Each structure stands twice: as C-alpha cells, then as structure tokens.
Image 1 (cartoon, rainbow, N blue to C red):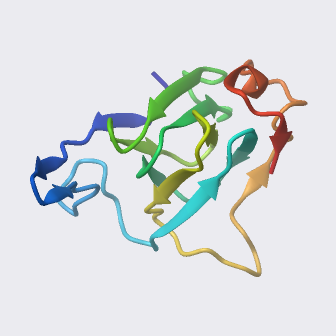
Image 2: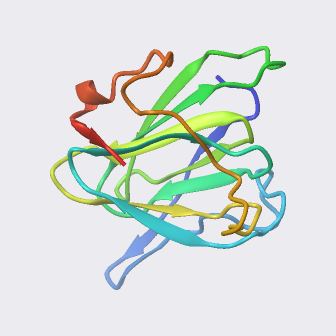
Length: 155
C-alpha cells in the first residue's frame, strides 16, 4: 500500500426507489479540506494519465461504469517510492480513493462504456498556475501497462 493512500469501499443505500451513496463527509478520516467538486469522463480505449499534484490531495470515486484507477508513488522521501497500486471501481462496487500529493495517478474505462470519475480535491484549480505535473502514459519508468487495460491512446 502506498503511504498516505487510502481506499475505502462505499456503502450505497439501495431500495425500490433507487439509491443514495455518501462519498465524503467532513467527519470522515480521509477529509482534509474542501477545494471544489468536479467530474471527468474517460472514453473506452483512452487513458487519462499520468499526473500528480504538489499541493493537492484528490478524493476519487467512479460513479458510473467501472474504471481502472492506477497510482504510483513518485515522492523522493517516501518509504513506498516506486510502488504501484491498481483499483477497479464503479457504481456497482463504489470506492473512495484518497491520492496524496506526489503520487502519480490516472484512469481508463474498464469496459466498453464511458467511465465517470468524481473528484473532491483539497484545492481549487488555478488556471494561471496549475498544480499538475504530467508524464506520458506509455513512455515512462512506471511499471504499469495501460495497454493491458485496453487503452491505446492517452489524454
């Protein structure tokens, strides 16, 4: 397990009317602070990877069809530097994944439908000075193969 990363299964409440699923509460152990909430969509065959943040912690949840979410610890001073983690999560098996600063992460659809990732980061996006550092998804030193997950192009 990468130091500082947490992954917690969520518990949807389902009945004949539909469902409700709490994602992140201010009294949850993963909660640090609120920056903003957004979602991103990734199409089958596309990977949105790799990137990390210097300041921001992300809280990721797949809220539709499943996605593969991968992480790699790039922090110089981390005892888990170089470790890779992989999760498959979606609406049927929801999970909250906390990604601390300095940990590369990315995702791709796990099937033939668009995957929707909801993020509750600790910082607001700064359009003039983005806290985002990128690597090519296929040409890098991270021991993870997005092609094996069905991705043929990056974003």
